[in-house]
Image (tube, rainbow, N blue to C red; front, side, top):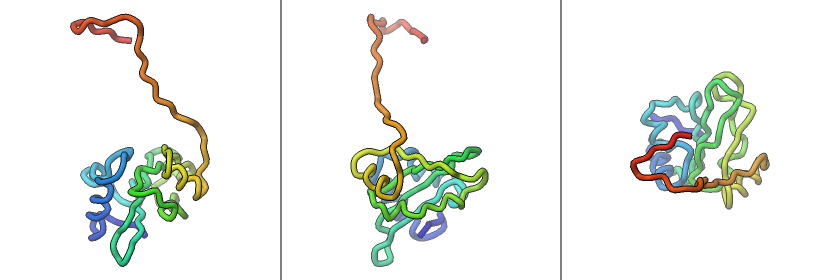
Amino acid sequence: MWVRWDEPQAQRVLDLSARSGPHRIPLSAWHAMGSIPCWDIDIRVLTHRGRVAEACRLESVRGTAFAVVGGLTAPRPQLLAKLPLWRFQSPAKGFLPAEADGQLRSALMAVGFRDVTTVRSHHWAPPGVIADDEFQFL
């Protein structure tokens, strides 16, 4: 099931998103920008007894063949099954990358995602000490 901003479930999705993460862009930022669900983002939800229990968000990368997994409130494979990439504006979306590890990575792999690269963070510390009042541009 998908959600629009004018639906009562939207506030529950915003609350769940605020308590989970990290997310690529906070869902509240999409809401504040007045993004249009179905064109800019797609919000998928799982319900339990008629109440939103978990949510997933896909984000369109305008002008490209990419959409990205912008956030999940829980690593639930059901949120990622049969993703509707056809609903975004042109150009057609053929690629859906996600950055994940741990349980989230396992959930993504369970629905057909595959590893394409590994990302490693590195803090570069050049030799020498730069004085507090000295600026260096590289």
